[in-house]
Image 1: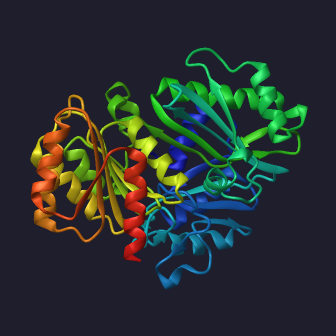
Image 2 (image 1 turned 180 degrees about the horizontal axis):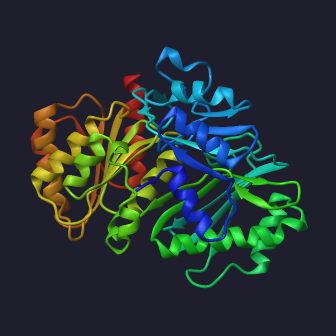
Image 3 (image 1 turned 90 degrees about the horizontal axis):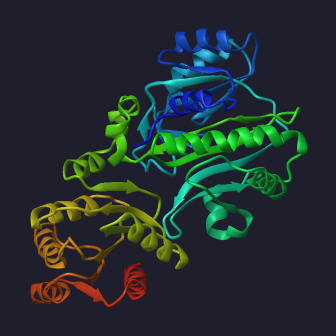
Length: 400
């Protein structure tokens, strides 16, 4: 589950992390009132609250919204209402939303922070090494995703303990990598410890501050914030569950949740169906190494039957970004033959207009392969994950 920037910043503040003064507004008049409260004079930041990155570079579908994106620096108080009117109720399109975009129903009005420079800081799970990993990078106007793909050496990856606090040698390592002044040391330690505790206390899957701003006095401030939570742990955090914005969930996410499947969308072209978080990340990583991105993945871990699997495949097929489908199943409790039956049922009903490659390993593997072979459908089977990815990419390239 994801939350909005303003909600994430309220959590950061409770953990002693500096944030610019700001508040949420739902109308143009309220936007101006909030601006007056957070700062007696400008500039101010006016931020569209949709759950997407790259809001500043996004654009609105409506003609009345002017030339600004989803994050605007407002110099004069008289400009606040005009810009708020342009943004509220309009559809903001970013690289993450797809061409349909998302409707802006609220704005975050924030005091402008004058900073010396900025950097990226995030905390995520490294499922391969079974640890939490702190990510830090001097983005300097570059996109963190671009760095991860094209310049991974520019990102520091530092494992953190599941308990306890970040130690000073780790803080110094981050400071040296980011080339921060010693006067930022205590502020950096507080920031890292804060997101570390948030991650553990709320069963988060990702905490990201992009960017962290460095003030003239060395103090660090979170200029943006994003937190994702483990859906399976929300029963322990009803206060977090209440923050969910149902309007943000698209129809595919809602349908996947109905079948108790995990579903996430990205910016690539391959739809993945997997049965576990580890195999999902491994599949995405292998696709990325071959220069292909993931459009979405559907995690069907747990109890399933033929009809549920068929419904899951239909969800993947309905995503317009999907140009190829990779089904990567490591069978255990989940029997491979059930997946095969679901594939045949879905493909027979909706047809296959994109390449589909399947890799099975585990319970009833041979039976599953026989089911697919006898179906006479244009489905390719692979012996291992690497071969499956290479075959799929070659099939996709052949269709271009």
